Length: 270
Image 1 (cartoon, rainbow, N blue to C red):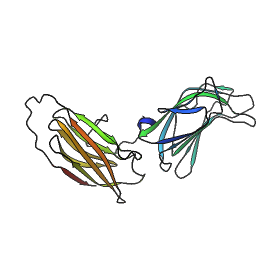
Image 2 (tube, rainbow, N blue to C red):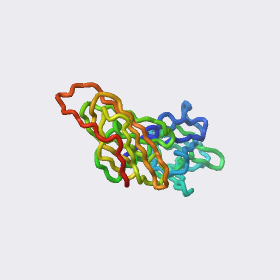
Image 3 (cartoon, helix red, strand yellow):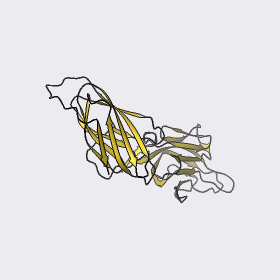
Image 4 (cartoon, rainbow, N blue to C red):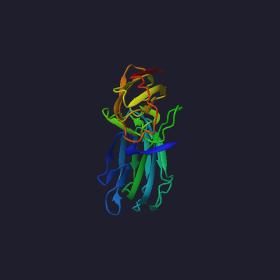
């Protein structure tokens, strides 16, 4: 299982809660010097209609009871079907220096954090909490791409984003449009179409559909820049587009044989 920091996951979010709480990068934290009184927060993921697997790691964590019998602090995960699951700090004493269990994992569209409350008061707290989203890998891969050079994570909220890649001369690898974070839960890709604007710099071959990923093999041919468009047709007829820009950088060719131009269009049906 791979976890991506929230800011790198491609999932949009809205934070609400106490004025003493803010999110910096992927970390929700108290913003006051010392401890904050009753620093609750709520995090809605995406448009609030899709469940995500979430891991929250309280880093420095201090929760101080005020002596009026308030309970332990807790997280609540709310799913798209409105069901909920709570994770409670097992230490309900006067002072807690860590959240137990730590880290906290759950599934939902919304996460709430509640400082422990009692009949008369709430707890004073100071903490930083790293929020991560599970990176859902395709069920099978025809090629392995360890980084993001030629793997685009399509966003549901920035549909005009262009993924730019730079390749060395003669390099051959698969170009991937990962639509998992862009299309609704339960939708499937039935057809994919790759279009290469100019065949001079890059050649295409071997298109495929792997779950909610669409792939095509590319090879750097000549120095220059080639725009590529990937169209994914869903089972309900919607069409999602991911744009690429592939730059073949300058460099020695070592007497490499000239590659054929290859097709400008590749269409694959699931």
